[in-house]
Image (tube, rainbow, N blue to C red; front, side, top):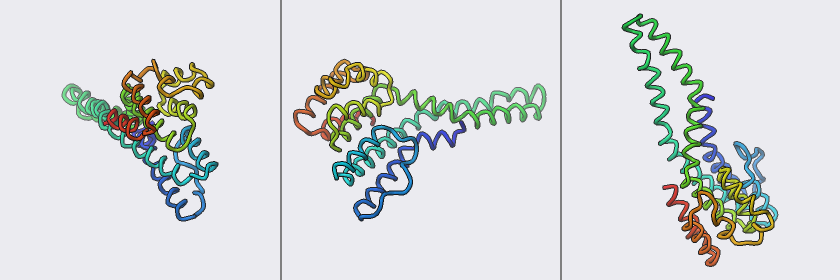
Length: 235
């Protein structure tokens, strides 16, 4: 994968945010739904919230929430990209500087051929390097936790049941450990117990995050607790 393709894939949240904001404006104006599907791969989280909005008559509000969600997601990814580009620059520098001794030992032509080959390889494989580095950063605990808390807030504000919000939020993290933890709890238990109990002992979810879930459920103020904590984690 080349770097341009990888960058577009990583920044898909930007396109989704624009899509749902545009749909929100069309919905408010009483216009028809967009002809094209949401850009990029469809994730269960967004599909469920759109379906809920259509079924409940709160589509306008759900579209606004999805626009906000993907805007925050892209903002977080952009911060990660700034950190992840350092290895790419090191690889680029290596492609240019590494073969330099050939210019003195063999000749300029040999250097140009070697450097050109390495640059071509960098252009073709740079996207995979970028994707791999970004994914490693995104799997750091603070980013996993931020995505979980943000998805929980949006899901519950949209009107999902607590159990459905917990399941979809776990999937939205993209983290295998979090997803496995929720699945081990069982669908019946997740649907009937509190968020704090569902995520107690979950990898990447420390005690203070579980306590915030308990406060949010008791107060009903998810935006002021879970979303705020997500913003602090991703800052």
